[in-house]
Length: 405
Image (tube, rainbow, N blue to C red):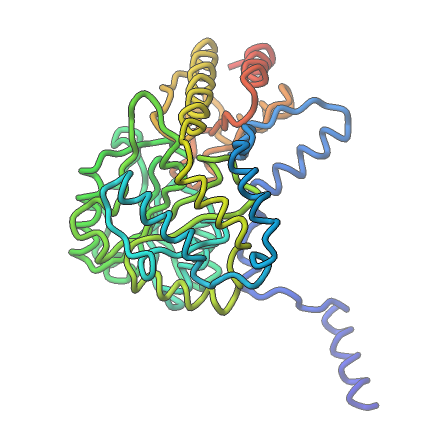
């Protein structure tokens, strides 16, 4: 009884509130796109027609032949058992064959391919699998927020590698301080880039791998938009660089290429020791992706690929339409060679946040502030063209009619 009273007294002294979140979680800001969706929901509830150009969730449907294959796999009772931790053999072998055909890269499906519950999951789990508390991770700035958040959740530190427009949004490896390099235990890269939509040639990856090997820093390349390309451009793989498998892994996704976002399926390929560490963490925290989804993804890689080129034609037309529309109001940007994002400078005298707030409140259009992707993103905003063309054109027209700059 006395111990219960003491506990009650202590609880009341603390203000009657339980500490239910760790300091680690407490330092993570609310996920940007969750905040945007909350604001959007409030506006829609108020009867406002909102055009959402914020999140990169494809509006084009999953190709019918992939859906049919998924349906067929759902009819097999054996597919409802626990999946294999590393991914079923059919999936891993399909990914290995894809790398051989697309990039001329040979992969051992047993040790150099790992199935993921979406590439986001794999990226988030790779960080604690490779770093210890206090270690530094090199992060592109601006970049996909999950890189930074994963480091904070692992009690690590991150150092930004600024991506400048004048340098094709590529990191200047020579500008990274030596003291940072000594502490660095991982480096992230991402091309075609999110949010910048920047693309690189194979020579960039040769330089990146050589730099990483010189300093002994493992590399994780996020290649989620590798097949979303235009105007004859074909995105290279970091694994094509000489010696890359000795120090690098690459993440791939089916979300953007095949509009399979909700199925949550991706892969990590490359350095077997890095993948082994990731697999140890994953096998202790999840039980793998649903086997029918893996088999449908394997089929997607090996079936007719006309759906990929057809979708890319649509995205390419949308990107050009938006670039032309923005030019008509004095915001000049070139349609990218990869991804389905427009990355453009905000007009003066706006900051990124002020411009996006103005566009939302006055035009009912959601665009993403560049500053949400890191300090070097200030002065830019991002548009996703994952909505129908007519809505994109309407969004540009609304901005033209309501915003004064």
